[in-house]
Length: 201
Ligand SMILES: [Zn+2]
Image (cartoon, rainbow, N blue to C red; front, side, top):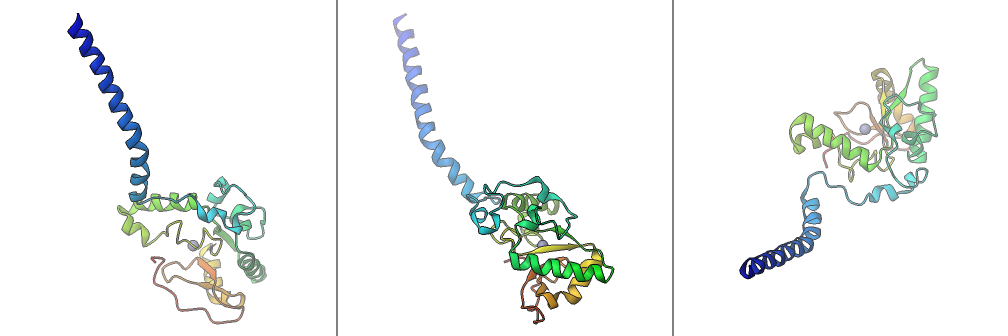
């Protein structure tokens, strides 16, 4: 009985040592893995930006997934989170578009970092690689939607209208491959900067 008892207690000690080592290693391992993961989101620094003042916590609001948003709905997170100057330009343009019988809505406005990451993850699945996805969807760190600096306009007729007349409001199509994506990139009546081919940094 004695040798068996000793073996048992040695096993208990061995298990305890393994657990202790695991407890020390695991907390160190997890952040290291997180840093190398392609979809890593830092501790949501973008959500501390003033554009997020309305939601406070920065938690994603399910309404930001809406894709047909009234540009005058100031209580909607996609509109409320926009840079105030961009929001004013958008609403001025929407008013004049309506006067010209052009229906205009926002298909995407301000996004939380969490939602932007979700879009990137989805694109990675659709296009098969992170590289291919990044040609179409920016990261939470680089997207101007996350800082409240961009709006996507729909439908196509409205995007076309803003593409032609947006400079009167300071609204510019900034990427050649996104005719729906506008940023406040000039002064009203000024000249829009040359378009970048796409949103890759
Ligand atoms: Zn956009």
